[in-house]
Image (tube, rainbow, N blue to C red; front, side, top):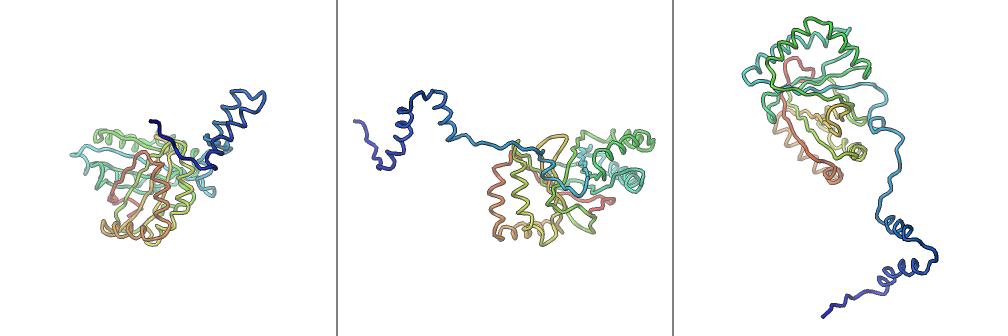
Length: 277
């Protein structure tokens, strides 16, 4: 026996209306019907005239950042750190090189035997190229790279811009631990991510834990890095729990989690030379 579905008069009119209108319209083509029907469901996206890097990055500065991930042979980590602490500060302090060390760390929890370096190039891409060209002529640096290569298993880097609404990463006194939270977003969602975090960052400022926020320009794309500082792991736990008690933080999580394909957290310890201690 067929089951009769009860429909209200309003529902019957809603379902029947478009069909009657279409059947009664002379010369209404199948293509037109299809276009009308698809318009009920297809979201129309207005074309943008600017790249998301222009919309999200800081206008008052032209800083470019480079983040390096070096996976070190376990037996070489101490020697790698010593070599790094000997050579990199010379580049940082030499005014001929338009680059600054922002932070240098070893990963404590996360990928083991790993070093992370964050550089700032004041002046953007021209400053980066100027620095790279000068380093090609720097014999001490070339020897450093040659010796360093014997200690590494692999390395990778990314060029980053900083979000306009995040704090600029400035030197800090320690001791602190640092958390680098990395989010790999779905392509096309960077603007939505930025819009939500522009409102949400205010919930994470009370304890001055927000260090810097960046998004990738070259390397793996649609990658976001958030850098946080805490006194210790217990402080991290308490600070993060406090954020959940603030009205509005839960909304940020609700709207941004669907944008993420993958996420990773590293807890890092600063090297002696790191401006972020």
